[in-house]
Image 1: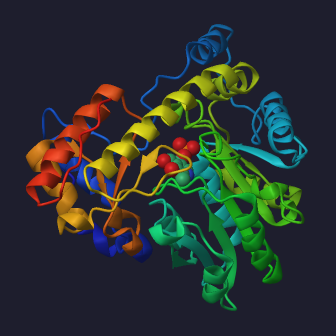
Image 2: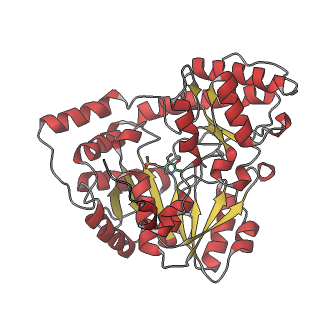
Length: 401
Ligand code: PLP
């Protein structure tokens, strides 16, 4: 018995007024139903490759059960530095410019808390990952969202950024490849945005968690652009590329003073990321390229089939260049994104995320993750085609997976 006290009056008002994630609310519904195909969660359907799991088991057998340095195992930081250098030609000092975190989630929170003073504004392209605005609010900042749209391939333009800048703007938060749209930004687009960031002395937090899942062109690491490394806080991790969501390892690469500031918060709150997960992450970097590339090939194939399937059932779909999400336009059905997602779940038992969970500019869309088996994707598309046909959309064909 916890008694009848009304806790709401005791809560931090920022937390009290924060709505729970739109995704969670929706998935509480899913949990009550049987036979649902869920394309809702942003999580690889693959199990972490065996050699990575094995490295963790060996680590336990050898007795690695203690804390690591607050910044993370030096060997892991060195491997991260090597990987960033080899892949993007950006160099970081493993001892001073890298911090191993409990997933990108922690890196994001640390970066916000270390940077923001009350009232500082953080510019965020929208639709956006559900955690961004709440993390800004919890750190005392003010999220300023900048709408992007399908007409512009969900990219942020220099013009849009310029229009949203005020004297309180401090941080630009980017995420390409993007969750939820799958949009990517090429080098030329990023150079234009970077120019504005430099002109207004913005710090850029670049969440590149989906960098390896890029299917169209090459991913450009923001820190690799001229003059950007010194103002970029690069976030990345192992959850998506190596199918390691449950392990909880990520990292931040940034200026040494900033890493020292974040490490202060990290050492008082997390202490360190779990040692066995860090050992597994080291194995992923040392020997995981092949298994990662195989998963990426699978996503790429599914992406193609899913986009084709959505278009053929009469839902316009922007071609996602990265991540593992499709973000079709569902307005031909005449339903709002919540109505669409709820009715599809009840009538056809397919779970998607309504686009407005990612902010108002996601309205008129739904997000579906194609990190699911081809069988599930095929069946989900057949059910969706039946669903939209009932709403008067002309279905041209039902894709065969
Ligand atoms: N950033 C983005 C854009 C994500 O989509 C996610 C997870 O869905 C995260 C961060 C969280 O990553 P992690 O598992 O490393 O905490």
